[in-house]
Image 1: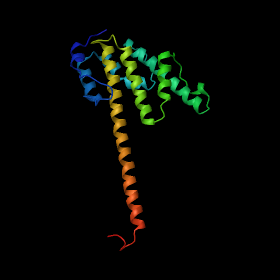
Image 2 (image 1 turned 90 degrees about the horizontal axis):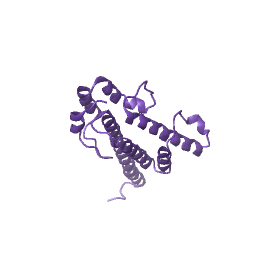
Image 3 (image 1 turned 90 degrees about the vertical axis):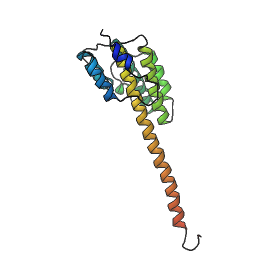
Image 4 (image 1 turned 60 degrees about the horizontal axis):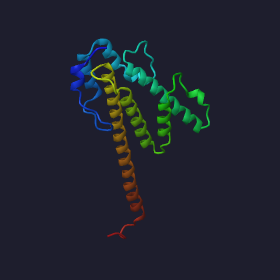
Length: 193
């Protein structure tokens, strides 16, 4: 497996939920310049693999392990949702191995009632899986792909935070102006000073 000493050592650190220090486009630009073409193509394809595209070959042992975990995680979430709505669970399950860790993580996330908190919980579990499965990676393709997934998680969290902020603003705006319009409608001219 190729080593990427310079690339890995120059990447800024990532913390769960912190604003990403660089975007995916910039990250991929660095990777394209500094990685061998096959490793770069696998790094670039990570989002497609996470969406269910099955590659002919996986070069990264970490990525293979994470995709198995992710499939089990999504399958268990699908199973719990189907069960909760009284639907046939098997109709929503994709073929793949099941990991006990993924089942526990899915159950934890499914128990959260608030939609935004549930999304945060999902991403926190995914982050923890990346950390656990890439713990022994260093300066290699596994490290770079783990970084890519963490960067994608933080980008998604930033989008969720921005969307939650917009929704909160819209709700507050509607409440304030709705109350003002209602008050204006009940006022008659000359009654207010």
